[in-house]
Amino acid sequence: MRRLNRRQFLTLTTSSAATLLLARCAESQPQAQANFNAESSTLSRELSNVRSPRIVKFDLEAQPSSVTLGDRTANLFTYNGQVPGPQLEARPGDAVRIRFTNRLSEPTNLHYHGLHIPPTGTADNVYLNIGSGQTFDYEFTLPTDHPAGTFFYHPHFHGRVADQVFRGLGGIFVVRGDLDEIPEVKAAQEEFVFLKDFEIDPNGQVPNPNPMQIMQGREGSLVTVNGKENPIFSLQTGGLLRLRMINASTSRFYRLALENHPLHLIATDAGAIAAPVELQEILLSPGERAEVLVQGNQPAGEYRLLNLPYDRGMMGMMGQGSMRGMGSMRGMGRMSGNASQTTPQVLATIQYSGSTAPLPLPQQLLPVAELPQPATSRRIELSMGMGGMGMGRSGMGMGMAFLLDGKSYDHDRVDATVQLDTVEEWEIVNTGPMAMDHPFHLHINSFQVISRNGQPEPYVAWKDTVLVRANETVRIRVPFRNYAGKTVYHCHIFDHEDQGMMATIAMQA
Ligand code: C2O
Ligand code: CU
Ligand code: CU
Image (spheres, rainbow, N blue to C red):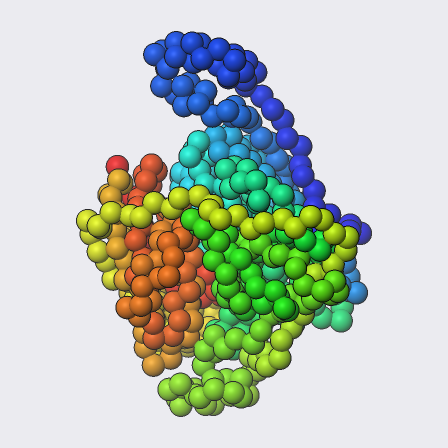
């Protein structure tokens, strides 16, 4: 049995010796760089980066494994026997090679959530079908201007995603760069908070969800941080703690608050914001990330990182809340859904230990460019409807259809065609009498949220997943950059995605 949550940095091989040499040369002799600029624009781009690009290699194996989860032994799906999977790290400009082997008895693949890389070939290609026993070499290069931030990887084989993620698959992908070099950020103690819930039966098996749970989006009663129940993070009096939080759960939302401590937001899904924003709580829907700084300025002691109750509009089946127009479904009330959470849950504990001269918060982080007026606008509707029994792809959706623009996902249909090097404004509308919250996610290109129900966003930030609450309209602006090809946008409650709440976007050069 393997121990959980050993944060393991995999083998990192530095290569491209020639480039390395040239870069060093350029650093000490500016003339050399000038010469190369004249000769090769590709090379000059690399040379302008003080740290020269490397080749980073990782080996990943999806496999069934027996792992310790809390006080239990659980039979899960893992990457390399670990939950969460190994932490992958790269820097802008790096060439990434991931040798991926599927040792599950079903097809799977990998998606690099939030990375700005090609959606095709050996890069972030969600259409790949890596069969049981097969090995595939993922290869891609991070652009030299890729933002530093907290990203993650997880399977994306349509129809199996919710189940594979709920059985444990997922891991962190860190891009290290300018954000990490800001002195105040660098001085902070760094911790990752990988949020994932599990359901384990007395035999150590992950039970199959019932139809109601699939409709709502399955949740597990065992909530973990980095594969542990209530881990301890230490904080020095006077010190700073940098929490890099990732909601890697299939469906569960986290409304995060730390006792007696405000959270100073420094980064959202796709990297830094311009200056820290002080918040009392942060809501992370599935797929979203946030980085915060916590100041050790309270009396020494223990403080709990809490998950506060949040109602994501699970159609009134849980006792509280109204039936929200579900009268016709009352006959199904006997089927139990997810237990509703009515009290705060403890996720982790921050424990004061030691002290240091007080570390300041950063005043500024990194500039966030505001986007130009969009050339095109588009309306995207998230909705749910009654279909015939067995209409859901999984056949377990109780006839509930999960739709984007009134349609269920079809691999052979292109739903949106966009032009590269343009900015589009998307109005995302969550509508219908049975509306529940849906986190909207777009692959490959990050966006900025402009407004929610007409209210302008308080600060500019890069996002790849945005929560669209029931009966809410969210406007986003997306710059389509660099990569042509097809990819997807979808609800990041994976049960909804698997049941058809996904669509195809074609990006044209
Ligand atoms: Cu993290 Cu298509 O998703
Ligand atoms: Cu994604
Ligand atoms: Cu959804």
